[in-house]
Amino acid sequence: MNPEIAVKIFEAGKSAGADFVEIFEEETRGSALGLKDRKIETATAGTEYGIGIRLLYGTEVLYGFTSDDSEEALIKLVRTLAFGRIAASSAQNAGLASVAEGFEFAPQKRVADYNVSAFKDPRILGQAVKQDFLFRADESARKVSSKVVQVGVTVTDSCSTITLMNSEGLNLVMDRARFRVNVTVTASDGTERLTTHESPGALGGYELLENYSPEALARSSAERVVRMLDAGYIKGGQMPVVMGNGFGGVIFHEACGHPLETEAVRRNASPFCGKLGQAIGQPCLTAIDDGTMDGVWGSLKYDDEGLPTERTVLIENGILKSYMSDRVGAAEIGVARTGSARRESYKYAPVSRMRNTFIAPGKDSFDSMIASMDYGLYAARMAGGSVNPATGEFNFAVDEGYVVRNGKICEPVRGATLIGKGHEIMPRISMVGSDLELAAGVCGASSGHVPVTVGQPTIKVDQILVGGR
Image (tube, rainbow, N blue to C red; front, side):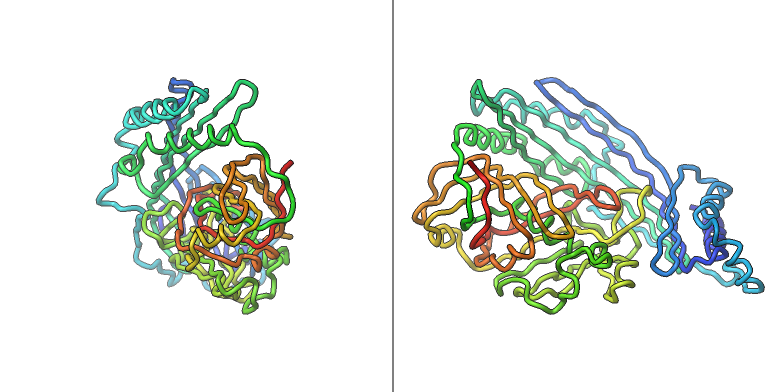
């Protein structure tokens, strides 16, 4: 972005009465290589470029985007966004000094979210680097059992360069790179089919291939799906549940994380509105959203408004301490910004979103959690589900589950679901383990789909509705 053109964009926005003008210029190159049924099924690569412009009138947001980077097109976009405000603002601003007079950008800062010294650039190395990984994973999964009937493996990457400028003088360039693997295994006993997957991800390029064993990922998925294929069903009802670490944190993410974003709070669409400083859980519960974790999938050095990210303690010893906020949400609610503004791409205005959100480790042992249950469910691994952010109501499937009787793990069960409301479940978390694990995911909301990490140690919920047969 030419600084002179940027200043003209600010001038156009300010002359239309905007309090704040922001430019978000992005170029992203992404690629994917996928294998299915022992054949390369997909091989895609593409580059996307565009510029988003945001005008703020107090906390009212006007946003538009274009792939035309000419001065004429960008000024026209501003005027289109501000249509109806320009004439009134021009009269009010008559005789005022130009924005350009005395305006200065801060010295340009360039940051990378990944380890630059170790980075192996996918844009240079190409797709062939991934092929061996795909075939090794396929072979490993099929060795587990003759019941494995289909294996899918995909390796994806993206590299972005983002220039962020605003009318307060910000001049920031951000280099971002992410890499993810997905292994999906389907098993069949001749009458039924069942599917499960592993999908780790991290910040960086092809150097990350060395961090993942295709054999281990595929074997883990295959063993789990074969085990669950032979499982029966649990009888549903209210019962205690021990939830496994890692992706088990998806329930906290969906049922409590989203309602703790100022995007929900400012619309009065959260059960946590007005509850800062109040107890919403037992003293064993601490929850954190941390954008600063090195190399972790949901991390970033600066958010999509150019604010440094931070470690935000949301709940501490059961007390609600903070929301996750962006510029608009922080202004409306009257809280500090937390570096939580995120967007999928230049096509979206930023709003408050999660980064790496997890329940912090506690001191309880796994054995003591299981031993504390007469009858219940051990949800070793969670799958997807749905949630209503306004009410916190959720419904999540259990990917791998086991009945617990008399303090002992017994037979595997499938088809279980966990049903409840996030703000009601939080006070029922009575035990928290020390085995914190994180899992990569993608979260969809009003500013698009963004990479996030969920996580938790093993936890015990004293009572939750379990759906079954």
